[in-house]
Image (tube, rainbow, N blue to C red):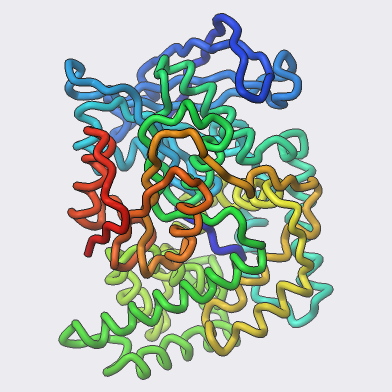
Amino acid sequence: MAVAVAGLGAMAATAGCGGARVTPEGYTSSTPSLSWKACEETASSSGFECATLQVPLDYAKPEGKKIGIALVRLRATDQSRRIGSLVFNFGGPGGSGVTTLINAAHAFSALNSRYDLVSFDPRGVERSSGIRCLSGPQMDQYMSREPSETLATETTLVKGFAQGCERNAGWILPYVGTVNAARDMESLRAALGDPRLNYLGFSYGTHLGAVYATQFPKKVGRMVLDSAVDPSVTMLDMAKTQALGFQKAYEDYLADCTKTRTSCPLGADAAAANAAVLKLLDTLARTPGKVGSRTVTEDIARAGITQALYSKYTWPLLTEALSEGKKGKYDGLLALADQYAGRQPNGTYSTLQFSLPSVLCVDSTDRPSVAQAEELARRLEKKSPIFASTAISAGSCSVWPVRGDDAARHVDATGSNPILVVGVTNDPATPYQWAPRLTEQLRTAVLLTLNGEGHGAYGQNQCIDDKVNAYLLEGTVPAKGTRCG
């Protein structure tokens, strides 16, 4: 089961088309006009507008088949001081920007005063020709599987997933890479009427922003890349770094539970708490539990733990879930695992777990085998006993039905406005060392560091928020080497 590099309705209205333009790549396309309408009414979508941006499926054939990119917008509250649009990507790859902005816009109220907040479902995600590889019951089985004792069985499972993607979404798989998503974002900028793209990207969104800045450096306005991805890392290096990163976050969580609380229900100290968690996982490996008609395996519990480690704010939920798990009650762990996997209450899944490998595999020619990934998992067992097995996902691209391309792995934004890269020192999903690496590769970037825990700095620390807001609202770039926390 893959460890996602991040985390997430409304109905979109159709768009028309206008005059022609030529991009730096040399392809010619029409500058679309957007027909904004009130989003399909839900309790949370009031005040939001939705539209659809028509873009070429294949940018090499701009007059060929088109696909719709679902958009959402919340207008600036102070129109007299409006700067323009601020475009968001919240990560994944595969997270729904439409759903996430509707649910999380309140966290960006300071920016919403002077920006229209805009987000989108990237191609292959949810409302934008979302990729769906397996049915709900098939995904339940796939997500709850345990690491196989035989390489042949594990390879068969991985191949079955890839074949489902080819069977159900083969027509779009070659076109969902980050280079094309960046081209879509340039079309969005033009359709919004902004001379430059103002952008806030989280996790995978930092990669998308970096690729955009590489393709369109002169179109970069104010760009913040929070929880940076290093696009140059190999699949095996990414899997190793994340397995160790989540292990470190887990150990920090145990230390917090046992040292800063009057009574940690998992144990008197970190060693005892860790032993209790390992015992719980071993019990589920031997005898899976039940929540109603659903089975809770060791892998489901691991996914639940992983989900809770993305933010320090969810550590209390993890404590409660593990404490109940010790008593044979697995509702909390299952709920966290469902959130991680994008499983809905009705048994269907979001496109996250399907579009994530689709993008990763098309973005790289790196194709480590399942056997190589399993060998890495074995080497990691001592250093990362809980998360080592997640490294097996690094072999998924070896059986992927679409060839990869390395264009998205090389970034250089020379000629752009200053870009602000933000990293968190104890980030488990996009480890801190990736932030200075991305900063160096972009050449026009400045690094801002949060000494702290969790995945994503903005909204977690007032110092970070002040620095980011000053940059986005006033254009004030933090001094080189600035640290918060």
